[in-house]
Length: 564
Image 1 (cartoon, rainbow, N blue to C red):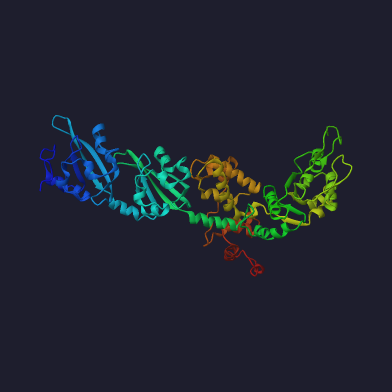
Image 2: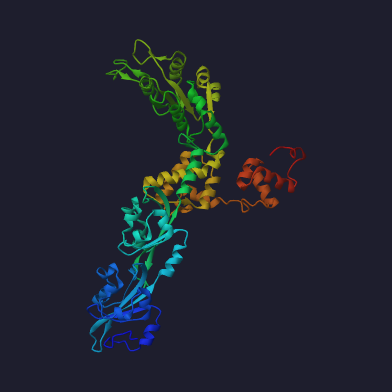
């Protein structure tokens, strides 16, 4: 059987030609096939007798025959052109193929045609189809060239429907217009990882974790990109469920003390009783005030806040109670105070410990008689408001020092909620870090996924004098400074970086087999035998700590019966 044209240039060994595993064919300058080996026949299902003498586009039936043809490009540029294409066999089946086209010259050095090799990638694609993650590839024009079965399940588009289409038409993601991971990878020549949201064929939103990388041919030339897809929608749903479980009206906590506060918030909010919120600065007292108001029957009316330490006494009085025209020099008009503007709502007095004694008397009258008198007014005004006060100061001590009225203290102290500092609820730190990452990623258009283990260990041991406010400020700066997908020690503020150099987590942190006696004695001494603090630093529970102490005879006989 003759498998080549006797006039075909440079083809002298038909048996060798047929023995090549890749499909091989040659064409003249008019794109007419001049030779065609046995592997090309296996690939296309068309015999050499039917192929030789016909233009190649009639045999290979691929879209690149008329646009971006590798053979035409090789002849035009006089270089070897390699790329991945999709061709069809005689039954119309799509065959992923790697092609490489080169120019052929006659003895005089003139171009007389071209040769193209064809490698069937179906076997490779079968392997790709077995991958659990979605995977697709594109050329440099972002046209999909491969699309595995997992990608089909994620998007709802079949392989045949996706091939040849721009990837933006398949994924319908907001990042298709701005921040495309594939384009970023091709431009930067580096792998890009992030989370994106897509809309599948049925209109359902899905959260994906994607990783994009550059595709190169054997010469190192960039020929497109490859992206893996992992559907994390169920994981996000579980995280959201957990967050909802530990979230109460924008307050996030899994701490047992905080959960007890959450449990009584509905009962407190249903009443009109005055509430005193006590806690250090930055613990979230204002969030509790908002939660109480939003759960109450006053939620359709205003919540008005006054910071008692933010204004001088003269301005604070007129700000709270209002002023009438002519009450003092400069009072040129009637002005309603915040109490009057708060009619029917909730009046939140922040930093109540800074309220001057003279105004404490006037506030007491409002609490007792539900009325107040603006500056310069002849008659009092009724006040239908609910009071919430907050302080980070010790009001009982201020009462003893006569800097805060005893009768006002008892009026405010109908219900007192003590909000623990962050150092006493360290189990909330991972939740708060996740919340901060989500917030500041949106604010600064970042795609940071986590903090490093060193950073988390540092956070879990840091004192946080500024409580949650301090943690959020640290996280905001870290997100701004971070250029990767994970926040490291280097991204933290300088003061915290300096502290990290002194901070060395216990070498046996989390090791339940135990630590040496000397190390245990040092940690006990450091925390003045406070076993809660020691167990927290060692990353163990109190029962494990008790066993370690008993091993080294560090437990007194009367302590053995103590419930740890």
